[in-house]
Image (cartoon, rainbow, N blue to C red; front, side, top):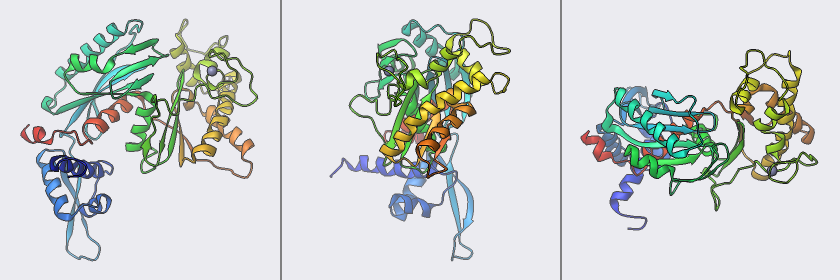
Length: 399
Ligand SMILES: [Zn+2]
């Protein structure tokens, strides 16, 4: 058979149906038929299996148009069906969480004050916290099907390798293998922008869209691109990593040796450095750069205009990149994620530049993303192991 065995085809059809149900809060069998192109008989058989495996349950009924008296029972995800472990690993956030198939986090532990110089030590601490969290959380442990990891750095999702992470100061760390061996779960590692956009596609502002750019701006910059419904990877899984895209005419030196890069003119680090001498009321002395960025980004008073100005100027510099994304990729939406992007003056700055460069237009599909790193890891895990043809449904039916 072309494209694999009959079993594989069944798995793929089942995944199509499960994804159709997961992408809505409640959905009718006839809508699933329209979305998947499968026959009514196939959908009845598959939904029966999904219900038996407790992945899906019957919910509200709706009256079908033109068929007076006929009730159509909608399907929705059953939050007891499958669970995933979610690990967020960035300079600022190291956390483990357990989530159900709806993406709700049912238990979480944030590892505060964890020194990150030694990758082995950090991995060991995360695994220890994960095991303790699993043991202390009441849910059907046989339904924990995988682990999603959202990490700040460049990854190879196929091998689970963290190739390099400037924020963590790590390179060539076999993260996937380390978590697999310690936790005994299949692991999917993704760089954080990809994880954030995956979450946005499933449950956020990018739901239902096929062409979206996400620019993540915490301390460091990252980004990724979905085009025609597919996350672009490129030869080294770095499509959309825009840190060293230059802002025309800007001559600020960048650590990479060039001038005017976004990293030097629009990133959280560039703002922290520009505001070194500013004292934020209530902020602790001797903050590390991550805490310092948080204090600055969450300071909304106009009492220190230099803070507003720094975020606005960084936003103006970023506006050049956003303009370039519109020109090059024609996205339906540009999402600005990360702590730096959440300061309102940053978005105003982006709009200042778009207004100057595109005087005939007055609105652009640019939004700030509210997805957090822990949620992004949840959706990487769900996308890889629950809404996936690799899901072992027989095991869940037997559970
Ligand atoms: Zn640079």
